[in-house]
Amino acid sequence: MFIRSAALAILVGLTAPQLALAGDPAKGAVAFKKCRACHTVDEGVNRVGPSLHAIVGRPIATVDKFRYSKPMKDYAATAGTWDEEKLAHYLAAPRDVVPGTTMAFAGIKSPAEIEDLITYLKDPKAAE
Image 1 (cartoon, rainbow, N blue to C red):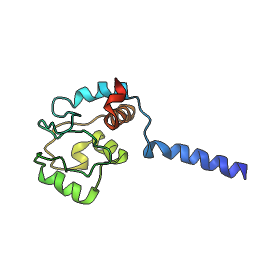
Image 2: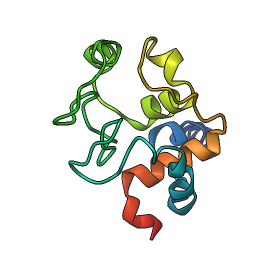
Image 3: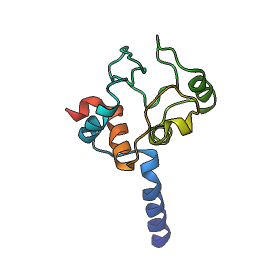
């Protein structure tokens, strides 16, 4: 019984980062500098890109007063909500995830940097 429990704990531990990231919000704030030219984390403040305030758990392409591209609206219709896994995939290669997106950003190659960035986006004040 103990061996099965230990094996299950290891398996859950290996999949847990996909379910609940534990990155460093301070490092995520640094990573966010790559996004800052087009995005903010302030509620209701859009730039060239939509505000990323409360993005984790938010339905995709739903920020008020932001005009999303057709490819992003199409993606939203099938993908639903931004969770950590979808964000990680998108941040690594936006144009692969949403072909035709107007977002010019090439992506972040480091999984650790993506994890830190998502942790920051979940609670920007934690980086202070």
